[in-house]
Length: 243
Length: 74
Image 1 (cartoon, each protein chain N blue to C red):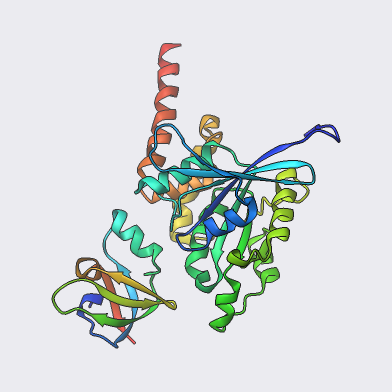
Image 2: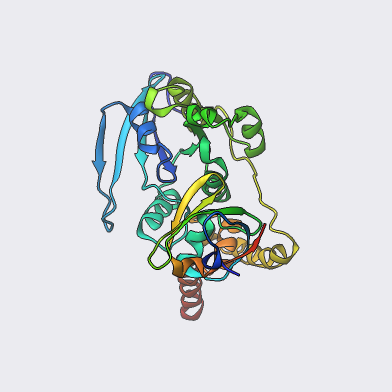
Protein backbone atom coordinates (compact mmCIF):
# COMPACT_ATOMS: atom_id res chain seq x y z
CA UNK A 1 0.00 0.00 0.00
CA UNK A 2 1.52 3.30 -1.08
CA UNK A 3 -0.47 5.69 1.10
CA UNK A 4 1.23 8.93 2.08
CA UNK A 5 2.26 9.49 5.67
CA UNK A 6 -0.69 11.77 6.34
CA UNK A 7 -3.23 9.76 4.45
CA UNK A 8 -5.74 7.94 6.58
CA UNK A 9 -6.09 4.34 5.58
CA UNK A 10 -9.34 2.40 5.93
CA UNK A 11 -9.34 -1.26 6.94
CA UNK A 12 -12.13 -3.78 7.21
CA UNK A 13 -12.21 -6.39 9.95
CA UNK A 14 -14.80 -9.17 10.31
CA UNK A 15 -15.63 -10.30 13.84
CA UNK A 16 -16.39 -14.03 14.00
CA UNK A 17 -17.08 -16.30 16.94
CA UNK A 18 -19.38 -18.92 18.38
CA UNK A 19 -22.59 -17.87 20.14
CA UNK A 20 -21.93 -16.64 23.69
CA UNK A 21 -18.21 -16.24 23.14
CA UNK A 22 -18.54 -12.54 24.03
CA UNK A 23 -18.27 -11.51 20.41
CA UNK A 24 -20.65 -8.59 20.61
CA UNK A 25 -19.23 -7.45 23.96
CA UNK A 26 -15.75 -7.41 22.46
CA UNK A 27 -17.11 -5.61 19.41
CA UNK A 28 -18.65 -2.95 21.67
CA UNK A 29 -15.48 -2.62 23.75
CA UNK A 30 -13.45 -1.97 20.60
CA UNK A 31 -15.84 0.40 18.84
CA UNK A 32 -17.58 2.17 21.74
CA UNK A 33 -20.98 3.51 20.78
CA UNK A 34 -19.92 4.25 17.22
CA UNK A 35 -21.83 1.41 15.65
CA UNK A 36 -24.70 1.03 13.29
CA UNK A 37 -26.68 -1.84 11.87
CA UNK A 38 -25.41 -2.85 8.47
CA UNK A 39 -27.94 -4.14 6.02
CA UNK A 40 -26.72 -6.42 3.34
CA UNK A 41 -28.86 -7.04 0.29
CA UNK A 42 -30.35 -10.48 -0.15
CA UNK A 43 -30.22 -11.55 3.46
CA UNK A 44 -32.33 -10.83 6.49
CA UNK A 45 -29.61 -11.55 9.00
CA UNK A 46 -28.19 -8.27 10.25
CA UNK A 47 -24.54 -7.47 10.54
CA UNK A 48 -23.56 -4.63 12.83
CA UNK A 49 -20.70 -2.40 11.88
CA UNK A 50 -18.63 0.02 13.95
CA UNK A 51 -15.19 1.54 13.84
CA UNK A 52 -12.21 2.80 15.79
CA UNK A 53 -9.20 4.89 14.89
CA UNK A 54 -5.70 3.66 15.51
CA UNK A 55 -2.49 5.52 14.68
CA UNK A 56 -4.40 7.70 12.26
CA UNK A 57 -6.05 4.82 10.40
CA UNK A 58 -9.70 3.86 10.48
CA UNK A 59 -10.57 0.25 11.27
CA UNK A 60 -14.17 -0.76 10.58
CA UNK A 61 -15.45 -3.86 12.33
CA UNK A 62 -18.34 -5.92 11.00
CA UNK A 63 -19.96 -8.15 13.61
CA UNK A 64 -20.95 -11.40 11.89
CA UNK A 65 -23.70 -13.71 13.19
CA UNK A 66 -22.47 -16.04 15.93
CA UNK A 67 -21.95 -19.52 14.49
CA UNK A 68 -20.59 -22.80 15.81
CA UNK A 69 -19.33 -23.74 12.40
CA UNK A 70 -19.12 -22.40 8.85
CA UNK A 71 -21.12 -24.90 6.82
CA UNK A 72 -23.88 -23.97 4.39
CA UNK A 73 -26.69 -25.63 6.37
CA UNK A 74 -28.07 -22.52 8.06
CA UNK A 75 -28.63 -18.92 6.96
CA UNK A 76 -26.39 -17.41 9.67
CA UNK A 77 -23.52 -19.66 8.71
CA UNK A 78 -23.93 -18.89 5.02
CA UNK A 79 -24.07 -15.15 5.72
CA UNK A 80 -20.90 -15.31 7.84
CA UNK A 81 -19.10 -17.52 5.36
CA UNK A 82 -20.05 -15.51 2.27
CA UNK A 83 -18.87 -12.33 3.94
CA UNK A 84 -15.52 -13.91 4.82
CA UNK A 85 -15.04 -15.24 1.27
CA UNK A 86 -16.46 -12.40 -0.80
CA UNK A 87 -15.66 -9.22 1.13
CA UNK A 88 -11.95 -9.94 1.54
CA UNK A 89 -11.57 -8.47 5.05
CA UNK A 90 -8.10 -7.16 5.91
CA UNK A 91 -8.26 -9.19 9.11
CA UNK A 92 -10.65 -11.43 11.00
CA UNK A 93 -11.08 -11.09 14.74
CA UNK A 94 -11.99 -14.51 16.11
CA UNK A 95 -13.43 -14.23 19.62
CA UNK A 96 -13.11 -17.50 21.54
CA UNK A 97 -14.48 -18.45 24.94
CA UNK A 98 -11.42 -19.49 26.96
CA UNK A 99 -13.61 -21.52 29.31
CA UNK A 100 -14.79 -23.66 26.35
CA UNK A 101 -11.62 -23.55 24.34
CA UNK A 102 -11.77 -26.96 22.65
CA UNK A 103 -15.21 -26.41 21.18
CA UNK A 104 -14.42 -22.82 20.19
CA UNK A 105 -11.22 -23.80 18.41
CA UNK A 106 -13.29 -25.85 16.00
CA UNK A 107 -14.47 -22.61 14.38
CA UNK A 108 -10.93 -21.20 14.61
CA UNK A 109 -9.63 -24.15 12.59
CA UNK A 110 -12.25 -23.53 9.92
CA UNK A 111 -11.25 -19.86 9.71
CA UNK A 112 -7.60 -20.86 9.40
CA UNK A 113 -8.46 -23.34 6.66
CA UNK A 114 -10.14 -20.47 4.81
CA UNK A 115 -6.68 -18.84 4.88
CA UNK A 116 -7.97 -15.71 6.58
CA UNK A 117 -5.68 -13.29 8.41
CA UNK A 118 -6.68 -14.06 11.97
CA UNK A 119 -6.32 -12.40 15.34
CA UNK A 120 -7.65 -14.50 18.23
CA UNK A 121 -9.23 -12.77 21.23
CA UNK A 122 -8.96 -15.26 24.07
CA UNK A 123 -12.02 -14.00 25.89
CA UNK A 124 -13.51 -14.72 29.32
CA UNK A 125 -10.09 -15.57 30.70
CA UNK A 126 -11.43 -14.61 34.15
CA UNK A 127 -14.17 -17.26 34.00
CA UNK A 128 -11.70 -19.85 32.71
CA UNK A 129 -9.35 -19.04 35.58
CA UNK A 130 -12.26 -19.36 38.03
CA UNK A 131 -12.73 -22.91 36.73
CA UNK A 132 -9.06 -23.66 37.19
CA UNK A 133 -8.24 -23.37 33.47
CA UNK A 134 -5.04 -21.51 32.73
CA UNK A 135 -4.26 -20.98 29.05
CA UNK A 136 -0.84 -19.91 27.83
CA UNK A 137 -1.62 -17.36 25.07
CA UNK A 138 1.92 -17.41 23.68
CA UNK A 139 1.90 -21.18 23.34
CA UNK A 140 -1.50 -21.06 21.65
CA UNK A 141 -0.27 -18.29 19.31
CA UNK A 142 2.73 -20.43 18.42
CA UNK A 143 0.58 -23.48 17.66
CA UNK A 144 -1.94 -21.54 15.54
CA UNK A 145 0.56 -19.17 13.93
CA UNK A 146 -1.59 -16.09 14.66
CA UNK A 147 -1.64 -13.42 17.40
CA UNK A 148 -3.58 -14.40 20.54
CA UNK A 149 -4.71 -11.63 22.91
CA UNK A 150 -6.21 -12.50 26.33
CA UNK A 151 -9.29 -10.38 27.00
CA UNK A 152 -12.12 -9.89 29.46
CA UNK A 153 -14.69 -8.34 27.14
CA UNK A 154 -17.08 -6.89 29.68
CA UNK A 155 -14.28 -5.09 31.54
CA UNK A 156 -12.47 -3.88 28.46
CA UNK A 157 -9.35 -5.77 29.46
CA UNK A 158 -7.04 -6.37 26.51
CA UNK A 159 -8.73 -3.70 24.40
CA UNK A 160 -5.56 -1.75 23.67
CA UNK A 161 -3.58 -4.89 22.80
CA UNK A 162 -6.38 -6.12 20.57
CA UNK A 163 -6.53 -2.84 18.62
CA UNK A 164 -2.77 -2.95 18.22
CA UNK A 165 -2.80 -6.57 16.97
CA UNK A 166 -5.65 -5.90 14.52
CA UNK A 167 -3.93 -2.82 13.16
CA UNK A 168 -0.66 -4.71 12.76
CA UNK A 169 -2.36 -7.50 10.82
CA UNK A 170 -4.37 -5.04 8.66
CA UNK A 171 -1.29 -3.01 7.75
CA UNK A 172 0.75 -6.12 7.10
CA UNK A 173 3.20 -5.17 9.87
CA UNK A 174 2.89 -8.78 10.92
CA UNK A 175 2.17 -11.56 8.47
CA UNK A 176 -0.33 -14.07 9.77
CA UNK A 177 -0.84 -16.34 6.82
CA UNK A 178 0.13 -19.07 9.16
CA UNK A 179 0.24 -22.04 6.81
CA UNK A 180 -1.73 -23.85 9.48
CA UNK A 181 -2.76 -27.21 8.13
CA UNK A 182 -4.76 -30.05 9.62
CA UNK A 183 -3.55 -33.50 8.64
CA UNK A 184 -6.72 -35.51 8.06
CA UNK A 185 -4.88 -38.80 7.83
CA UNK A 186 -4.08 -41.03 4.89
CA UNK A 187 -7.67 -42.11 4.18
CA UNK A 188 -8.91 -38.54 3.65
CA UNK A 189 -5.70 -36.95 2.38
CA UNK A 190 -5.57 -39.38 -0.56
CA UNK A 191 -9.02 -38.11 -1.58
CA UNK A 192 -8.23 -34.46 -0.85
CA UNK A 193 -5.04 -34.34 -2.92
CA UNK A 194 -6.61 -34.93 -6.38
CA UNK A 195 -9.47 -32.53 -5.54
CA UNK A 196 -6.99 -29.83 -4.51
CA UNK A 197 -5.01 -30.32 -7.70
CA UNK A 198 -8.15 -30.10 -9.85
CA UNK A 199 -9.30 -26.92 -8.10
CA UNK A 200 -5.84 -25.38 -8.39
CA UNK A 201 -6.30 -25.58 -12.17
CA UNK A 202 -9.38 -23.34 -12.04
CA UNK A 203 -8.24 -19.73 -11.42
CA UNK A 204 -11.87 -18.50 -11.43
CA UNK A 205 -12.41 -20.56 -8.30
CA UNK A 206 -9.18 -19.63 -6.58
CA UNK A 207 -10.35 -16.00 -6.65
CA UNK A 208 -13.28 -17.04 -4.52
CA UNK A 209 -11.94 -19.67 -2.15
CA UNK A 210 -8.69 -21.44 -1.22
CA UNK A 211 -8.20 -24.83 -2.92
CA UNK A 212 -7.68 -26.97 0.16
CA UNK A 213 -10.62 -25.46 2.05
CA UNK A 214 -12.88 -26.03 -0.95
CA UNK A 215 -11.62 -29.61 -1.33
CA UNK A 216 -12.52 -30.30 2.31
CA UNK A 217 -15.97 -28.77 1.81
CA UNK A 218 -16.57 -30.86 -1.33
CA UNK A 219 -15.70 -34.00 0.63
CA UNK A 220 -18.21 -32.89 3.27
CA UNK A 221 -20.80 -32.75 0.47
CA UNK A 222 -21.32 -29.04 1.12
CA UNK A 223 -24.06 -27.81 -1.23
CA UNK A 224 -22.76 -24.25 -1.69
CA UNK A 225 -19.21 -25.43 -2.36
CA UNK A 226 -20.52 -27.82 -5.02
CA UNK A 227 -22.54 -24.98 -6.54
CA UNK A 228 -19.46 -22.77 -6.69
CA UNK A 229 -17.49 -25.42 -8.55
CA UNK A 230 -20.25 -26.45 -10.97
CA UNK A 231 -20.99 -22.77 -11.71
CA UNK A 232 -17.40 -22.20 -12.77
CA UNK A 233 -16.98 -25.44 -14.69
CA UNK A 234 -20.26 -24.95 -16.56
CA UNK A 235 -19.26 -21.41 -17.57
CA UNK A 236 -15.94 -22.83 -18.73
CA UNK A 237 -17.62 -25.61 -20.76
CA UNK A 238 -19.90 -23.00 -22.33
CA UNK A 239 -16.95 -20.83 -23.38
CA UNK A 240 -15.15 -23.84 -24.81
CA UNK A 241 -18.16 -24.94 -26.85
CA UNK A 242 -18.98 -21.48 -28.17
CA UNK A 243 -15.43 -20.56 -29.15
CA UNK B 1 -25.73 -48.49 22.27
CA UNK B 2 -26.65 -44.81 21.91
CA UNK B 3 -26.97 -41.85 24.28
CA UNK B 4 -30.68 -42.60 24.27
CA UNK B 5 -30.00 -45.88 26.12
CA UNK B 6 -28.12 -44.21 28.97
CA UNK B 7 -29.61 -43.07 32.25
CA UNK B 8 -28.73 -40.18 34.52
CA UNK B 9 -25.28 -40.38 36.04
CA UNK B 10 -23.87 -42.80 33.46
CA UNK B 11 -20.62 -41.96 31.73
CA UNK B 12 -19.71 -43.01 28.22
CA UNK B 13 -17.58 -42.07 25.26
CA UNK B 14 -18.63 -41.31 21.72
CA UNK B 15 -18.03 -44.04 19.16
CA UNK B 16 -19.80 -42.60 16.13
CA UNK B 17 -22.39 -40.09 14.97
CA UNK B 18 -24.71 -41.90 12.58
CA UNK B 19 -26.77 -39.02 11.22
CA UNK B 20 -25.57 -36.75 8.39
CA UNK B 21 -26.67 -33.35 7.15
CA UNK B 22 -27.45 -30.38 9.38
CA UNK B 23 -28.21 -32.46 12.48
CA UNK B 24 -25.03 -34.50 12.19
CA UNK B 25 -22.98 -31.36 11.65
CA UNK B 26 -24.48 -29.64 14.69
CA UNK B 27 -23.84 -32.69 16.90
CA UNK B 28 -20.20 -32.63 15.77
CA UNK B 29 -20.06 -28.86 16.39
CA UNK B 30 -21.34 -29.48 19.91
CA UNK B 31 -18.40 -31.78 20.57
CA UNK B 32 -19.91 -35.23 19.95
CA UNK B 33 -16.73 -36.41 18.30
CA UNK B 34 -15.35 -39.96 18.42
CA UNK B 35 -13.53 -40.58 21.70
CA UNK B 36 -15.14 -37.68 23.59
CA UNK B 37 -16.22 -38.52 27.14
CA UNK B 38 -19.70 -37.50 28.24
CA UNK B 39 -22.01 -37.85 31.22
CA UNK B 40 -25.79 -37.90 31.37
CA UNK B 41 -26.87 -35.23 33.87
CA UNK B 42 -30.64 -35.55 33.59
CA UNK B 43 -32.76 -37.76 31.42
CA UNK B 44 -36.44 -37.06 30.96
CA UNK B 45 -38.08 -40.51 30.63
CA UNK B 46 -40.81 -39.59 28.17
CA UNK B 47 -40.28 -36.08 26.91
CA UNK B 48 -37.28 -34.17 25.61
CA UNK B 49 -34.62 -33.13 26.26
CA UNK B 50 -31.63 -34.97 27.64
CA UNK B 51 -29.03 -32.93 29.51
CA UNK B 52 -25.54 -34.13 28.56
CA UNK B 53 -22.27 -32.88 30.01
CA UNK B 54 -19.57 -32.73 27.30
CA UNK B 55 -16.08 -31.24 27.73
CA UNK B 56 -17.27 -29.23 30.73
CA UNK B 57 -20.44 -27.74 29.26
CA UNK B 58 -24.08 -28.80 29.15
CA UNK B 59 -25.78 -29.72 25.89
CA UNK B 60 -29.51 -30.38 25.62
CA UNK B 61 -30.47 -32.84 22.92
CA UNK B 62 -33.67 -34.51 21.86
CA UNK B 63 -34.17 -38.28 22.16
CA UNK B 64 -34.31 -38.44 18.37
CA UNK B 65 -30.83 -36.88 18.18
CA UNK B 66 -29.55 -38.98 21.09
CA UNK B 67 -30.34 -42.10 19.05
CA UNK B 68 -27.83 -40.89 16.44
CA UNK B 69 -24.87 -40.82 18.82
CA UNK B 70 -23.33 -44.28 19.31
CA UNK B 71 -21.47 -44.62 22.60
CA UNK B 72 -19.71 -47.18 24.78
CA UNK B 73 -19.79 -47.12 28.57
CA UNK B 74 -16.75 -45.90 30.45
